[in-house]
Image (cartoon, rainbow over all chains, first blue to last red):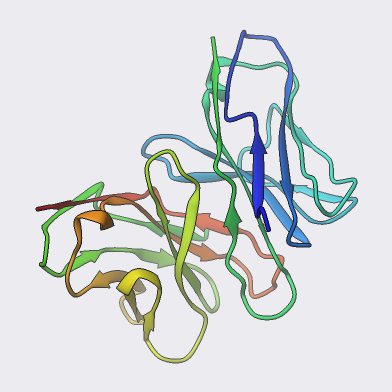
Amino acid sequence: NAGVTQTPKFQVLKTGQSMTLQCAQDMNHEYMSWYRQDPGMGLRLIHYSVGAGITDQGEVPNGYNVSRSTTEDFPLRLLSAAPSQTSVYFCASRRTSGEFNEQFFGPGTRLTVL
Amino acid sequence: AQSVAQPEDQVNVAEGNPLTVKCTYSVSGNPYLFWYVQYPNRGLQFLLKYITGDNLVKGSYGFEAEFNKSQTSFHLKKPSALVSDSALYFCAVRVSSSNTGKLIFGQGTTLQVKP
């Protein structure tokens, strides 16, 4: 299994540009989520999904959109990038059935908005 | 509101000495607690979790954590630190008993183990 994969690893955008961060998992996990990591602030939840066709907002959803058309993929879209969105973005997935399962994280995407 | 606090930004320890990374939590209802580790330029890796049962939980790489309900704490421990343990450590709490509950992270503690 490849686990959770993210592309690209690095990205530089200009203010106002849009882009999509890709996330895929091959573990058939129902739950997928996006976090951003900023120094001194830990990880903050942006959006999450409990299955295909179902998404919901996390702590910091403004400026981001998500969709979940398949179990495997959970892309994160930045509609109009702002410097405040400069961060490291992590995608994660886990099973929802059974006990309280740990999340598996992707390697991250480092985004800089100029 | 549900929250997790890691009171130390950085913990320094000499190789071979015991280490403790502190975590306190605030939740309504039963806490479901996790520790993750992040090595430089990598994603987070699961270390251990507490759901119910024994207050001392054992995890990966020789780490363990002690759940203390009266002090609302879940401190990460290791009897003998290694230089390779140097990394960023995150405590997290599941905010609902449902399996769809969200995970709330602390701000992270950098562990520096010196030879």
